[in-house]
Length: 135
Image 1 (cartoon, rainbow, N blue to C red):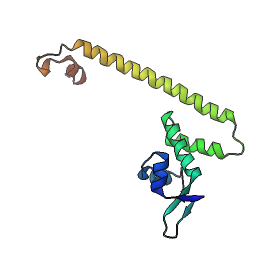
Image 2: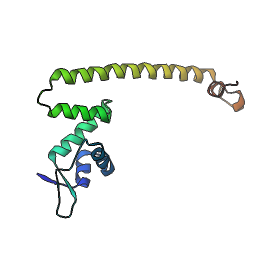
Image 3: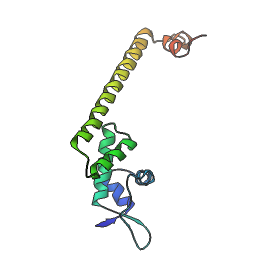
Image 4: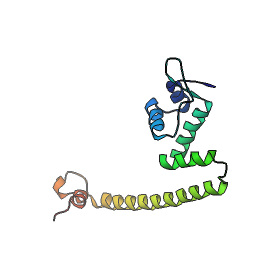
């Protein structure tokens, strides 16, 4: 059944219409039919696909990776191992991102602790000195 316009698809899946159009440009989703007036029409599978995209993005997958996941989903030869490998790779990436964020947090905390605050002139601020060092 293809009876959802792009606006209804966006509403049902919790994204904006320009997001749907962008997914179409990337070849991730496509209308299932066209109305007599030429409007794009989508069905429940399109809603499921857009929700899949949103959930995968929430887990850190890029749109290129999501496109691959959708290809796997429809493949006759793909296995759980294929999906697990991509998920494990994303876990490694998330751990690296966490290390980077922890390093960033520690550096910011150190700068915050070094700054006396108050009414000192900004030219005396150790945070600014760190960000804009003299050469």
